[in-house]
Length: 84
Image (cartoon, rainbow, N blue to C red):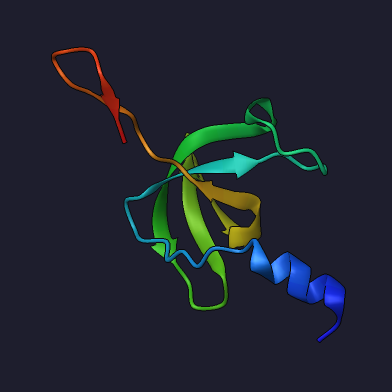
């Protein structure tokens, strides 16, 4: 394994996607800012080859998980504090 791969893999976080979970779709391009994402969309099916199906309106689309990012909803308590 070369040094570039090792450096890239250090930042990677293992994550298992599940049916019903919400995800953000990363737009094509290098920059990954908040405005470079669409969603959230609901996962309808998880495949073993690193792809999932998401529901985008009336379209059910199969995508590679590299184009997705987990979406975590913020929950607000009565006292106004936000919790994830």
